[in-house]
Image (cartoon, rainbow, N blue to C red; front, side, top):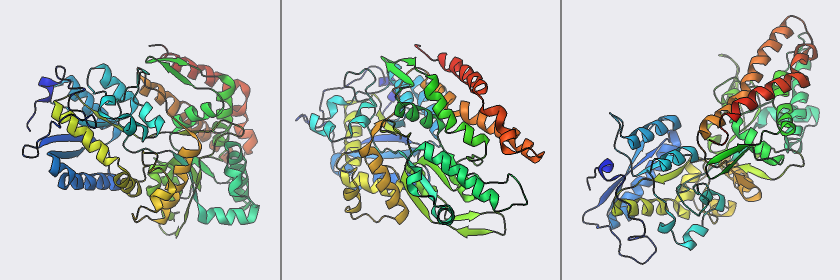
Length: 479
C-alpha cells in the first residue's frame, strides 16, 4: 500500500476500530498487503538480530496477514531523533514519517505534543497489557491516565563488569572480594586499595597507582543514586518538572565519584569504559547490560604487549542502606498516526516481536532484556533453546535479577528533559576530568596525592560546584 503519511497525519485516527483482541474484523487483506516502515538506531549485532526477526515475520505471520515490515537504521540515537522530528514537522528534504520509530521518553513526549503518535491502550487487551513489566508500560503514560504511547520492545539495565583476570591477581594479594563491590562506598574503598597496591609495585616511582573503576552514563548515576538515597531528582507531574537537587544527597554522589576520580582511583579516558578496559586503564566499570557484548577479550597495553582476559558480571552497586532501585533504559517503539490498516499492522508486528520466543531470541543476540514478565526470567532464557555465549549468559542472568529484585526507574518525560539530563551527564564528570589533569600536573612536580588533590576535596569547592549546577538545572523547572 502506497501512502502519503503527511497528507493524512493529523486527520486520521482510527482508534477503537478493528482493534486487535477486540473481536472486530481485521482491516488487513493478505491479497493487498500493507507496508509499514520501522526506524531504529540499532547497529552491529543488534541490527543484525532485529533485521533477522523482521525477515522472519515477513515470511510467516506477515505473509499470512498481509503485512510487510521494512526496517531502516537511522544511525545514532541523535540521528534518529533529528530525522523523526524533521519528518513530523514536514521539513524540506525530510523523509516520510515512518509508521513506527524507536524513541526514548523525551523524544516520544515531544512527538506526542506535536500530535504525532497513537495511544495504543485500546489496541491491547487488559490481559495483554498485564503481561508486560509494569514500569515498561507506564513509561509511555505521559498524562497518568493509562496511556500507552511507547510500546516496550527491549530494555536494559546497568551491571558491574570486571576484568576477572586482573581482579583475581589483585584479590589474591589483597584479600579483596566481590562482596566489597556490593555498594558504591565499597567500590571507592576497593578502588583506593587497588591504586595503592599498583603504586607499591613500582616503589621507585611515586604516585603512579592505577585506576580501578569507571562509569558510563553519569546521568543514570545521578538519577538512580538520588532515588536510592531517598530523593527523586526530577519530579514530573503533567509534564512539568519540579527539581529536588538535595545538597546532602548530591554530596554523597560527589564523594563516591568526583573525589575518587580526582585522586586517580576512578578514570574515564576512552569513549566508553569498555575502551578503558581494553587499554588496561581500569579493570571494572558500570555500564549498560546491552553493551556487555562489547567487552574486550584482550587488553592491549601497547603495540607489543597484550594478554587475554576473562569477563565477570556482578550486580550494579547501589548505596549502602539505600532503597532498591535499578535503572530502566532502552528505547521503546512509537506508532505514528496513519490509516486503520497501518496502525493495526504496526501493533500486530510489535506484539509478535515481543512474544516470549522472539523476544528471548532478540535478547540473547543483542544483550537487551525481554519486556514480558514471563520472558524476563533466567529459567525462561536458559531453557529457550537459544544458543547463548558464556558472557551473555552471565550478563543476562545478572541483569534479569537487577530488574526483578529492584524497582526499575526512569524519569518521566518533560519539556527539555533531554537537555536537563545532559547537565547531569556532564556537570560532575567534566569537572572531575578537568581537575584530575591539574592533580596529575602537581604529582609530576613532586607533590603527594593528598597535597595535589586537597584543593578539590573541600566543602567550599563542592559548595561552589553545587550552586553552579543547581542554577543550570533550575532553568528547566516548571516549564
